Amino acid sequence: MKKIFLITIAATAIMFSACKKDFDPGTTPVSGIANEWWATFSSGGQDLIGHPVKISTYNSANRADSIWVDDLKNGYGFKVLAHWTGNTFETATSANQYYVGTPAFPATVKITNGKILPKAGKSTTGIAVDSIYLEAVFSDDPTTKYIYSGTARTNWPADDH
Image 1: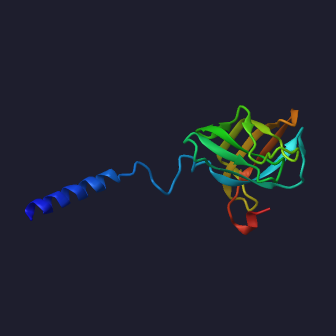
Image 2: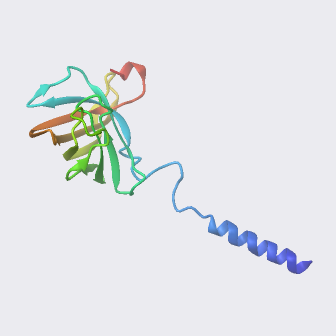
Image 3: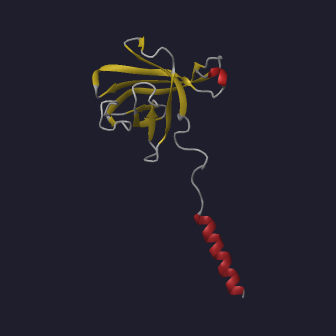
């Protein structure tokens, strides 16, 4: 009986030590830059839409050093996987997940100078928030540089556009 008790205790100890987690399950490596953003979509200094649009950055299941950059089809229409380091991100030329073989969306997107600037922006109501900036070139318009720039979404109705 004593032998069975010791084996049970040893098995339980091994089981609990095998379940040790090396990360906080409530966060991801990109939690500092994952957000929704209110961004102006422009080219050549011209606002192309006339009001800020919602875009998103969020974690990828692929690797710890990649994020999704997604304009939620609110600008040019792209969702690409970008490499990130610290508060910067970029793509060489990344496949657009919204592209389905038709000219409705570009096949590939190149992002340069992507960055998140902590507390560098102000929401509509004046709250200090992070800001985002990125330059994009789309495969169906390779000679034009488009810019998304804006501020983090606070989720307060008074700050939504």
